[in-house]
Image 1 (tube, rainbow, N blue to C red):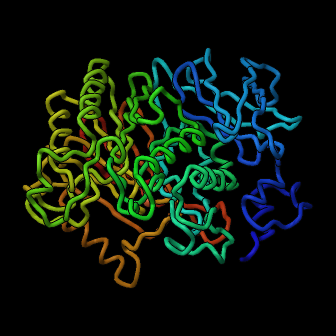
Image 2: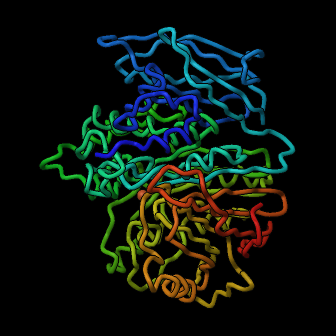
Length: 519
Ligand SMILES: [Fe+2]
């Protein structure tokens, strides 16, 4: 195993830390930097009057309980403290700490920190949702961070952009041992524990390792997160009753593994908890005044039926198969209706898998894990859009490790004209990954391959799998713009990035055109 390079360490953490000894892994690095709060701080699920604050205390050996105090202020020096408190955590929740700080002002920036065992946490910055007369919203959109395959440079790059919140669309981590999906040996990024995670303790350890990553700590301390899970927070290609990467005969009961993954997720992620933690309902709504409603979906766990073969046309179209499940579908229809009643300008779906048609209906599809594999479910969402007259739909997608920009006509292969955009009901933007690889457009014939995709799909404007990064969604009354940013490398720590591509749709058009510069 190679050590984290001294140069990368200093450039990211500041020269003041240069005197510290070389450390063997990212977890050891965090231990040296702040032994009590080695997993950093985070905030999430902002509402107009409250936000979740998160940290984790590393307790003295043998401790079963731990008291922690926290405070939240208007300023970074904590001269104007707004609210504070004290609470107990303990082994039952893996010494993670979660506070719902209430009584806050809308659209406001706050700073927070924790104290325990005479140590002080890093300072976090967060922001509440705006309430009235919202003229602009900016959201960072990320997905798919795989530790052994590279550094999370995209996180530290996005930390330095001005955004209201970061949406994490899932694959916050991966469940594999080293060398099963990427080899982290050369970078000193070996998954911990180095095995496929199955038990509660193993899921917790994997969460702890990712939260010790310095780039992850930087973005969590800088912006509130709004998260949803994809499959790898559980196991590859999760559905409600199992997963491709789960073998009951050797790995035990799926419901036990699933409960362990859910419990550790709620412990370690800055998400508001409800009474259903073990029968999890992660789908929920965020309102940015009447400028935008954000619907965060769960296309993985609560309602997804098992995948079928990508050539089984009858099963792919079967009305009895679902991606969301009945309860979530009903919820979504109700939430759409309310957003329409409120005259909301933009209706944004934050979700996991590609929504747009990848192939003409009635033909074999390239990938049955996405909405193409659940065609009746997609038809029911299109029905809602048409019947409820949902304006300006924007579907945001993770999972696919490549960047895509689609219009969303209901029948794209029946003469849709991507120049006029006539008949489109929305747009879809899919982000690339933080570090997980893609082979789309890679290799000597890459450019030709990408052009081939765009030529073959009447509603596709753009695809590229050759860079890692994220995108920023920028909303005003007049237009939506999505700006794709590419990091220079994930093979060493770096804050180099470039604006790669941007797309705009004007309000009322549901039709993407290329932007000449970032919003
Ligand atoms: Fe992924």
